[in-house]
Length: 191
Image (cartoon, one colour):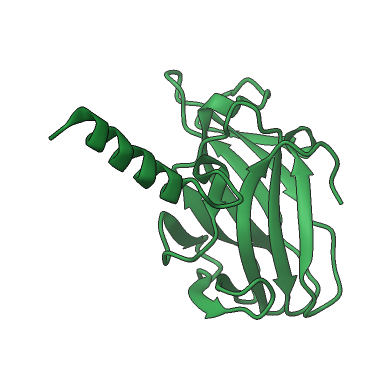
């Protein structure tokens, strides 16, 4: 095949892939391609969350619907295999809670050679029940929580991140979260 034709085909494909408003490497999940790399977990005193996709009117497309049952322990919905692009310093997403109760976000490192992986948390502020909120959380707002499997270094290492967990602990009633447009951004101030 002529190199010029091959080059034009590659440019056309790249233009199609990258023509959206959000660069693909910044997008953690917009839930338009099903459930990829998500897992549900709960400790022995809780039931795991239930995950489904729902059509949404605001913005069109789909959102994740995550039902967190009432829990006396901890229940987590986790997105695995994440990485934070070099020039991004915040996490942006849209969220709607059936009760107004909002989750805790946990950024978790993959265990290093010494076996430790640090976990950092951010509590999403409560909101009006049933209303979509756009939230932007600077990475600097994630506070050290604990180390898994060792002492840890207590410093957020953007190159070591493994998962983003959405967590409820000791929640007296069930909460359904709608979640959409998870993405990294370079905005510095949370709304």
